[in-house]
Length: 246
Image 1 (cartoon, rainbow, N blue to C red):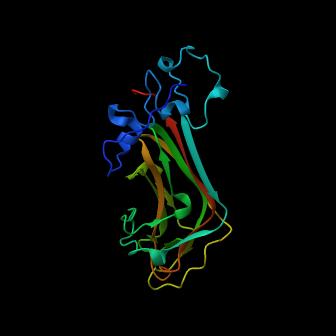
Image 2: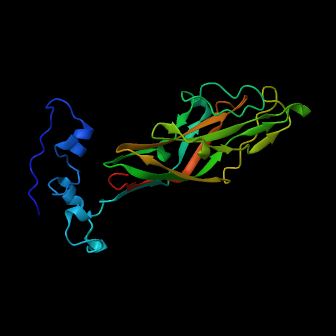
């Protein structure tokens, strides 16, 4: 094995991720070279230019774990709650289908995570959960109904994936109005909505973050008591390393 020289950084006062990992031509921690003299060799360094044995000459069990992929899964089996009392404002006009602003939404901590990936990659990600929520369809005595709902949204690498938006429909009904009718009875606590969402994207090295948040369109008289509960769920990320030069 070649001797790995000391890593010399251009700046002694700043940390530059490009310099540390790619070296900017001076040799970083993970920079494949014709003569493998960086930390890359600790993760294999097995492209043909670095190894004279030829293609397919090294068995799969010789590869160090984490050389070309990194996966992370977090699951939980304890209740997590988000209440409409935490929201800013309610649902406004009947028929509205908006998702709420970023400031209004509540981050679902159990379904959010951040994972460090040290190389350019293809990221596969997703979440799954059982969800139970309080939401009412007020018939307004035969008038235009007011319909409550909860919306579950995914933001990944600071971008909202609108294709993964999940709307949880109303779970109970009332013949009266939202403001003048009796408080509707509670939703059936033993009934759960199963939600499973997944997608993927190309990703540059750094922290890969997936953030699930909820927002509820909830009217009086229970605008402070309505909730969304999650008894169990999980969030996952799989990063597959992109070949050099792609």
